[in-house]
Each structure stands twice: as C-alpha cells, then as structure tokens.
Length: 286
Image (cartoon, rainbow, N blue to C red; front, side, top):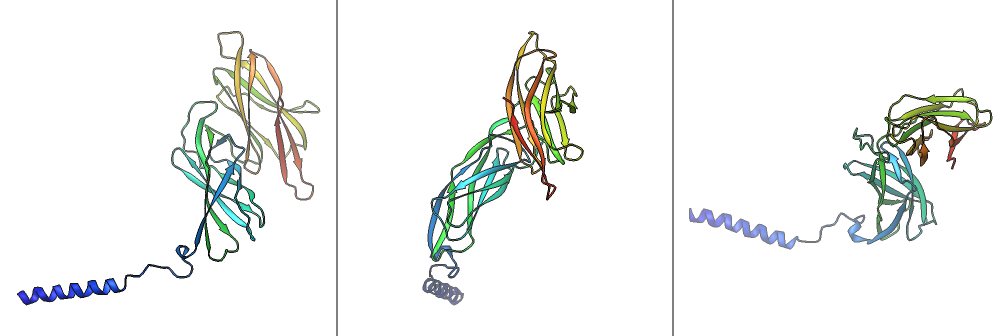
C-alpha cells in the first residue's frame, strides 16, 4: 500500500516539472493585439439632439485626434436608463478627423413620465469602437469618448408616408387645444386634429398633397384654467420620411379660450423630379 502512494506522488511531481518547462507567454499568433502597439484614441462625440422619442433616429458627429490613410468606421452606442442599448455608425473619410452618422433609439418600453418634456438626461450616447479599412502595421487601435446625455419623450410618431405631426402641451387634456394645417399661400385648410385627448396627431401625406409651403395653426378650445388666461407650454415632434424627428418647443402666452395662433410651425414639401423622393423642411415660426 505504501508503494502505491509513492507511485502516484512520483507522477504528480513529473507532471509539475513538465508544466514548468512549458510555461511560456500565451499568444494567439502574429495577429494578436497583445503583440502590437496598443493605441487608444480619445474621441469626441456630439449630437444636436436634446430630446428624442424611443424608436427615433438621431444624428451624431465624431472627431478623432489623428488621420488615417483609409476610411475608418466608428461605432456609437445609445443607452437608456432602463438598460436597453442600440448601436450606430459613422464613417470618417481617409485623411479626415471627423465624420457623421445616425443611430436609432431603443424601441418603446411602454413607460410614460406624464411630463411634456419626458425624462431629461435619460439617454446617453458614446463611442465604443473603431475599425480601419486598411490596418496599420504593428498597431492595434481602441477608442473611447465623452458621453452626451439627452432626454426621452413619452411619445413620438413613426414613419408613415408623409410628415407625421404630434402636438403635445402642458395641462392636456384639461387644457383642450386643436391643431390645423393650412396652405401658406392660399390659406386653404388641409388637415385638422381635434380629439380632446392629450395629444393631437396628423399625417400630412405625400400622396394627394401638392408641393409647397404650409403652416400649422393651433386653436385654444378651453384653456383648463380658473384664470381667464394662462401660459401654455407646448411641444411639436415632426417625424420626417427618413425617420429623423424635428422637435420644437414654445409657449402660448396668456392663452384663453378661442385664441387662434398661426403660424406656429412652417414646413415645405418638395418632390425630386428625377427620383420622385419626397422631403420636408420644417421650422418654428417664431
């Protein structure tokens, strides 16, 4: 029995000696980033977005500290406070230090803040990756960036074959406001939305609507206040055919029942004669 124990002890010592002799640094071969000069790029990300809806598409720009001989694809991440994330990309051309791209916001989770301006600073965009079209010899690049926060609205509208307009305001639905769309030149009324609910929505369709200039008007049906007048903050979210959303905010000062405000939002419908592609440009009237 003693010889049996000694036999297994000898095998253990022999295995340990072999392990020590083969204890070389691990490597995955010539392509291993550990064998290259690892360079981290401190990038800067920016977006014009201060408010967005879940499921919307927003633009962003990115700047890196050096140029490359080939194009570089930079990956951005949007993260919501509820933990959901999405990815988007921007291309930085060869010889340049900046580029632009778009990224989608995670889809609607059904939650609602009940606030006109949604949840402030509830989304973050940052840069998390970079890929070069042509690799740089003996170099492996990583990337990091600042973080930019923006707010998420309770609701916006999706792409629907035209200019999809959502109107929201403080005090709804007790404060009851109605929305109309007119031709800016003839003052012909094309659209109306008067439901008495929190939101008024309207789809200005591509089909059946001539190219030209239009405006959105608002009428106060009842201001919902015991005072004869009240300031009413408002928000418009206009979803364009490409999925991006133009957002405008403002205040109707001293609003009273039957007050009529126009123009509040201006927009122009244009059809490309060669491709037939319809586009819209929007602006706040004041």
